[in-house]
Figure (cartoon, rainbow, N blue to C red):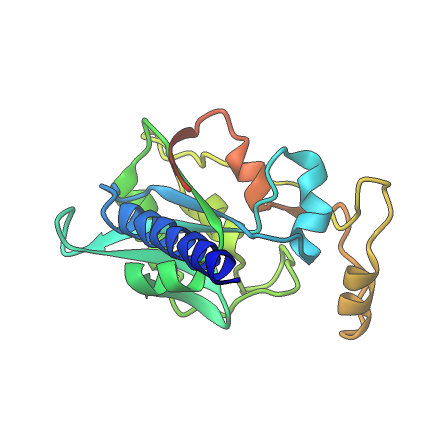
Length: 211
């Protein structure tokens, strides 16, 4: 029994050290302004249930990295999450996503300063939990889609028909109930975007994964 307990403690310590190493590696990574961080949750959820069939990766969130005070300044994530579009300090972003896989991607040949400035203009805008294209609220991948432009001023990402169905083609009960509670129909097929779609874009270069 003592041997088993010793072994279990060793395993737990190894897991803890590995997790700490991963957090340290992410914190110490040399982010560039405009880098995108895609979040892969440890388990499926309502978003990945209806978007993972369009991608090999079950992503449910994306954020934009930004250094306040220049490239050597404090790193923040510009993200639409919770109640609004906000600036999240890097350490807070790490804590919130400590059990998730994180993918860092970079887009060459974009107007980084204007793209980040576009995103910052949305800070404080309410979060859009209805994912509607016609309102003034913003969700995470919509923030990226609206903000990122190339060196000629054109948007990098286009919209696609929204998907609220699973891989059988059926709209999931979660989303049927979600919209019914607001007296709305599910906006299946309306123009929009999602993190999995953005991650597949040919312009993206994946530069790091944690873990």
